[in-house]
Image (cartoon, rainbow, N blue to C red; front, top):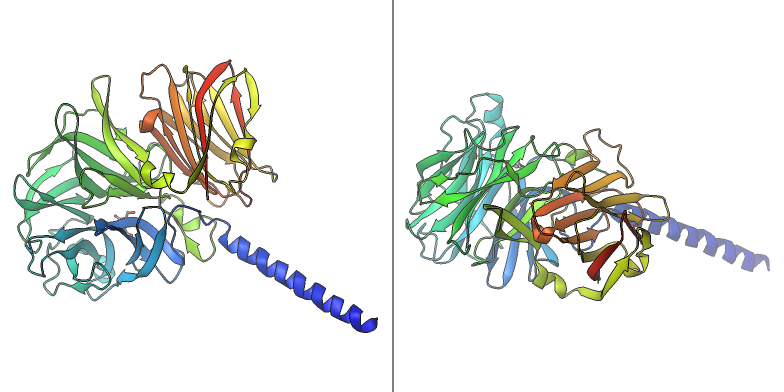
Length: 499
Ligand code: FRU
């Protein structure tokens, strides 16, 4: 008997150790998103060099592999066939004698203009030299290139780097390069302090200044970073959109991305836009740029964080994720063209299970928990309200965490309130309630959200008003209540649990 008691005791100890280990493990992975990209280890910020090549999407990213705070920047690398399931690859670009590797882009050199080989994959990035930075001359950032002849597996830095030396501008970085067919040249869109400077090149190795934009236009609450220039079709012909991330000075404080709709002739970008427009009003979508080589599909992915608190968000062995990739398009509202972003639906469908329905909701609260049951906090939900009315969605769990989101008719604003959603006090700059104006003038509200354990991305009115927001809860939300101040018709309630 004594012997059995001993074995039982041992088993109990073993089991409790096991449980402890499991709990520890769960804790470590507690904030890991299910279907958004996050690095296995270390720190991540901006997406870099995103490109579609022979059926594979490549994502490179600002990466400090050694710790979970920003530090010496490398380009991490991940690949995906569908933009949702990512496979991490070995680090692509390491710091060298010219500096650490800041943000940039990648192109395919189909015509071998640079002379590294036909179809070479060429990365154009900023070298940031921390030593020169200390000299305060402002010459510490310059543009360099590297090429890969094996589809991004291995990289060789060009011996003639830098290809674009610094002319004396303190912030001189984040080159986004594209081939401009009409002018027959490569065009580099570069962030230069609080403006954008365009450069042109025939061979990616020698660059000429073309023009500058933005000194008297747009938001200037912080430094301009990570620009992108894209051409989007409209029924009135092609329009050019210039994306500019800015930090700080975003609409909900901290980092955010503004955009300008205009025209680009191969030399100059012009806009008649007078107002300031934000791509996403949420606090957690920064440095977003689009993939190269995706034809007419302009797919953007952003870093799901904010410099105001990014280095301090609750974390363990890795930090930060990316937003869901989004398709960009233009939509006209009241004579103005607005940038519209929506999740890459085709790709998401393949991993979704759906439930649909149409409901009449009485004034008051309806329990919608059944729709998200079994989701483990990873789902997409959408519906249309057939009139413009106040509503709240309340996501909660048994720990008492609550995320509040919805529409405020009086203010004509969509909102996300994370003040009661878990840990909010790790940094005073972690703004808790964020709002996005309603631009649509439609008589119905179309509302869509993606929840992935510790993040929510709202796409309202077909992607005209967006809010991306992180939160830090220890147990996934499994309860959902819909509240309205009036009787409303909810059409096409559509919930997809993401496995
Ligand atoms: C934007 C940014 C870029 C820079 C990179 C450094 O988040 O500041 O301007 O290249 O991060 O990691």
